[in-house]
Image (tube, rainbow over all chains, first blue to last red; front, side, top):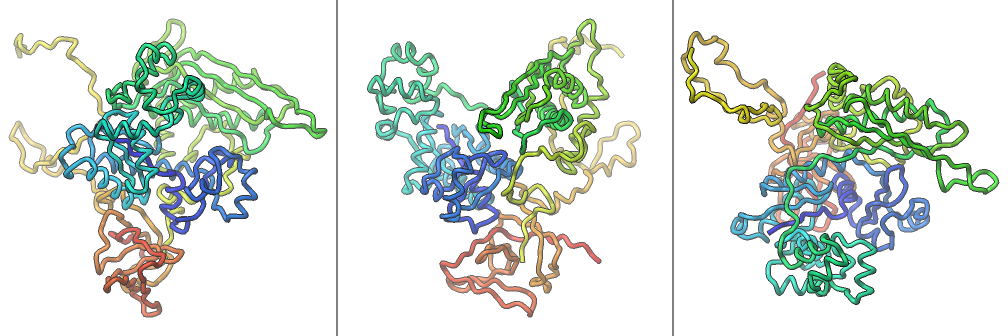
Length: 426
Length: 150
């Protein structure tokens, strides 16, 4: 059996964890830059707020219903996620952290402890509720795809009290019969429309289609899904996280930025972030792409569309590198070559790819190997920043007063990671 | 010294050692006699870490700062940092952190029937009587007080 543990409205639950005044009230969390709603409490969902609605469209509703609004506090959410995953790991050995708020658990061997799987899931749920004050839903089934469905049932039906086990063919059939095929894990808009067109509406109908038809029309991925729905596992629990294939850092500026100096300071900071991620996963990047663009939706003073500019430059590095200062040197050259004067830029981004393991690097014939000292300096920088706070030590070209930093008007305290932000008690 | 044939190691079996994973190794105070032991060997224990002392359950431990003198009788003063463990049960008589009508408070908890009493240890403050249905929930049990002397 496989379990899927999913934190309910995770970002909202993290805010509530330290501020119970938000319980039973509509709460939303905004995306980076306070752009749009990315998490909603059930009360906010009931008011009709959809995922991804821009903040400015919600202002009236927010005032009318006294909705609490938060900027996304990823430091807090990340720490709470780590605590929750670690707590789950105390119960079950094989845990695949699938996303910040979801984990698959391999339940093989736990069938008769606690004394059964439902009791185990209830114990996990109540522990996370007490230790991190975050409500979860737990679905259990023979495969990942079915566990995802069981999870949804656990969440939707209050009778299940957050835990649901799909352990018999009758239960699975009943669940699939009322499950909309477009809601299936891995079915995109296009396939959903295609299936509807062919009169296939429920997950049960989909599961009972002939294999040939599925693989002809929905490729091998569709077939895998059908097998998973029939109870044959095709997606395994992956506890060793695969290294990321690419790292991208490209937040929008909080305001329009016209000048090269500010842009290049932002770039240095983003490279710092990306390189930190690189070193964390113990890889070096061989290829770097820098891109810049203006705001496509902006109009100029006379209501005509504003002048637009987009450009990017991909640099193949002479040797893979994970050193911040080395990467910055190449990035700045790339930026200079694509920067055009006279535009208001909305975004600069960096994408690192072509990864090799950090401890295995090949020197090519005509270039020198990376400077070991630079890498050591970068690693020391990471340690200092970990200890004294983000960006405390940075490369000088990252500038001093980052006015381009993005907007976070409604940020809650970093209750668990910053001493001056810890909760106050009277 | 001769190297016996059985000591031969196939190059394929030589792997690079990794120090990525750290294991806690139990320390034994008795030593094996081999040559002249260093007298310091007996004392090679791990450096004391405050986390080992104050944080027994990292996943459920939080730090909070005191802003009032309501618990002065228990030597908890304004400005102190409290170590709070949410996994501990708030049994009668423990100093706890609780959410009560709009704020978090540090008090000693007592149970009286279906009522909860939050006791301050400063006569300037009144006990808080929590009735069923009140806006109340326990955050965790205070396990350590970090106080900076004047």
